[in-house]
Amino acid sequence: MPSRLERLVYESRATGSTGSLLNLATILAESQRNNDRDGLTGALAAHEERYVQVVEGQGERLDALLRRLESDPRHRDLKLLDRYPIEARTFAGWSMASPRIEPATGRALTDLMSENAPSAARVVELLRDALTAKGSA
Image 1 (cartoon, rainbow, N blue to C red):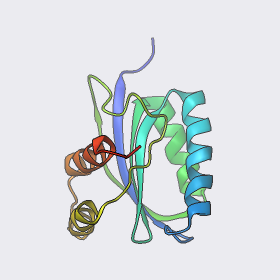
Image 2 (cartoon, helix red, strand yellow):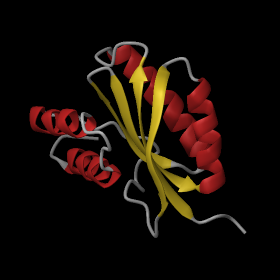
Image 3 (tube, rainbow, N blue to C red):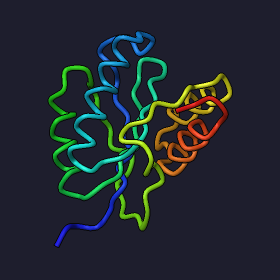
Image 4 (cartoon, rainbow, N blue to C red):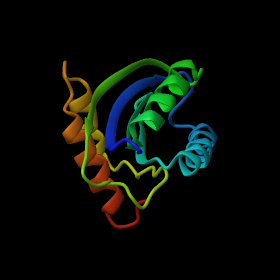
């Protein structure tokens, strides 16, 4: 019997520039391919030399993802913000979406990530709202 759905929210420091379209395109392509294979969905924000990501799926698949991320040279200082069971996916339509970070969302992300204990629920809300804003996804 497969494990129930979980949501994982983390941040990491980028070792390359998050402003580089090539870096972002490479990570997104690899994430989409792996997530399609593993039944994972989510969203990734690349902002201020940091990656902030929400990933949803079966627990054992999230465990495998964490192991890959911890050894991925594009990430350092990986910090798990939260991991918890969910009833339904918020990012069901995206194997790995990357929302456009508009100035207001960027300020909100900057403020949130500067907190001692950033709210994972707020990260999910910001990324979901950025994806559903006109012209994103």
